[in-house]
Figure 1 (spheres, rainbow, N blue to C red):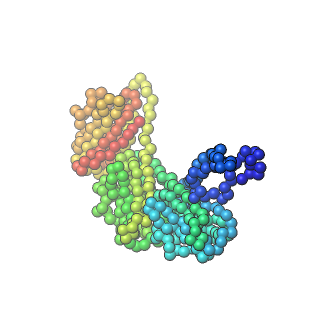
Figure 2: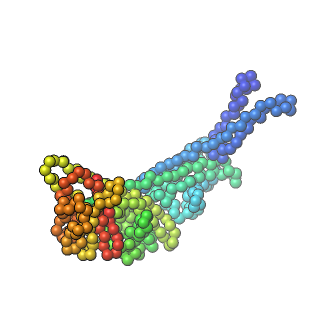
Figure 3: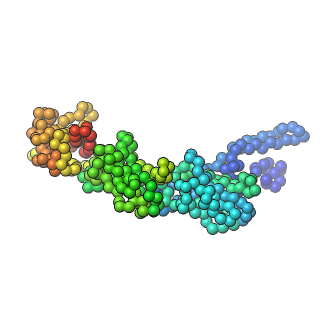
Length: 371
């Protein structure tokens, strides 16, 4: 406390080397001859340290700097909560790797001589979004708890953009090399849920894929040895936009995870209005040799009901299904199901906002927004 506090009236208290263990309610009570004359309440709160990282980073640091020259019999434990896992233990002058949860084996490093320097920070290698959560560093001496720090570790979700018409898009995931041979890798998509790609027992398991992705996904050779679990998705459309997760399992235990948010770059087409008629092309290139019973619909969406712009059913266009406004105003390439070039054209009015639907006998639809 300050000197001459009764004269100055400054009854403030300085607390040295605070930790989150000190968080709570404090009261200052002032008495005179057994009579209570003053009181003040102070609520002391810790600001939780937050650390962000990008999946694919080589490492992330969980910081904790405390007093130097801690006693030699001090024990340092880094732990994770929800789910509870022991991350790293330092005791008797060395790391105690045998006490770690297997998820963290070979992935954690503390600085040399942490007790002398007071730097109890932990470096976590090859972080994934499965590592996101609350971590605590607990410092013990002779069974007594003397220090604590909480670090909230958050992942920056990976976002990947692609243009419709691109031959492929890559969903990246680089993790540790030489994963065990019995590791299983699953790429999944959410909303709607679909199994995108499965790698197990040294090979791809195509029979487990959702039919939408059959023949459209590729992983690199020997992904477990290289640690490159990235997935290449061929012929992406905006129907593929959404959240994808790569889940890595071993003997029924979840050991790695990464989330990738896949977004489409919306195709924009502009044209110059003139007095005479003009042609403008609304592009859409997809896979070749679509099923013969596939149906292609170009639809314009406005504030009111949708307007049918163009319909194709093998072997020809279906002008009788088009809105009257578009009669004789649209055309597509010949054999669009064979070439995969479902291009609309010959517009003579102003901007069109449209959507294309390609539907096959399975009921699967691909949709594309055009502006």
